[in-house]
Length: 573
Image (tube, rainbow, N blue to C red; front, side, top):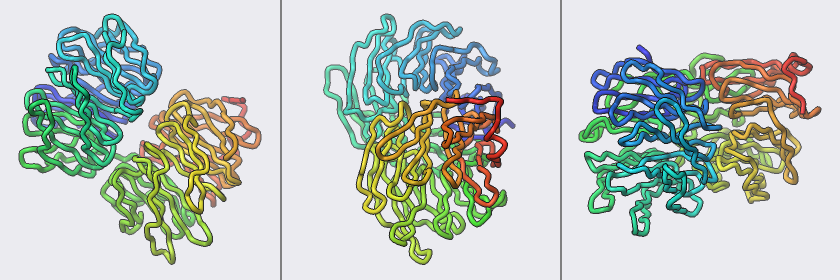
């Protein structure tokens, strides 16, 4: 049976008959809703972010990081058309309710309107940041969009003009849902739901302890579901122009709160980190056994005492390829901490990677970590999705909490340390230097990157390097930054440095790595290791080789010497 090999990012349903899932393995799968068996699949050239059935169920649309939307016929999953017009990842999808047209939104800050056959009708410009969600108003040619610029905009699709523009204090708004009566629900990164109606001041409701990633509305049930990175989803009844909380549910550890869909009046299906969708029964308030298997993706790699350790989507901690511990949830990082190994991820738990002991439970998922030492005390700093860092310290291998401090207003995507500073990069594109002893902010660079920053590494001597979706390499000290063009054409996911800080290896979401000589300020080699993305880059001190982990479950050893003097694929600055 066809299943996913990487996490599921998007999910959609049609008429209690079909379920579709969009995966980070570049495929979309159509499932039989009755028996849970896969019926067919379609392929993109990069991550598939979301999927959506047309109102009549004849078509399935998929949005992708290959910058396209694809239209598939249902149920045979034949490719109908490829919609080209965006210049960055496509995220949101919305079919018109009565016309054969579709609106798409993208991280290129635009909305496109297409015919089903692929003809681009119009491009809407006006957002200042990534446009994550888009919806058509019922029986109307008005489009609603939400963006990371903190606005919700109303567009006349015929003229391309903005007819209403609502701003919400620059708080990123990832998701919107609409009723047939033109009530709009918007969910933001402060955990708020905003109810928007004509000629009435928007109503703001504090709903979650972390950002809301998805809102799903059932017109039939008059019911809204909110999905948050606080590891809960909430069910709301829409009554008398207001929301009444019906229930609060904890996510199963395998659920990825990026997407959900009503299957029927009592069942909801969710995106997951496994090979198929997750399934919840609202009436019984239980997760149904859906036979979900782990995917093989490796999210992080490190070296400790000569051994290579990995962790990934399955939560399996492996030493030299052999499972040492099963943690039961996706983990995003694994780093040495003295003689210990520390890991964490989607559940917000900071674990001892080899024993499973939980040292601290945070309110949101965790992204990254780095070890350091101050006045003889070993410490570790962990970056979270909600902008806080958690600092733990160790005395005689006893680990306890030092402090929890907010460094950023959004997800911390990378953290590194040097002699005097903790350096962090953020999903907003910001970068920051904090004092390594008292954690006070030394310098905050709001527009440190042109797009989302994805990772950073220490080069020693209070110097750092970072990478971003803007395809640039930056080398930082507290007073200055040098910016270098890279040979990458797709988002750069990760970066690592050798022990000297001279050689840097960059890894992309499409499996390429490039070596940068920081002494000569030039890239030498740009090669593809995998059809899947490179998730993390470490360095093996004993072998003197880089370790590049991939979402295909493999770890590649990259020898520096053969790449230093390469003449083919040379990319000089």
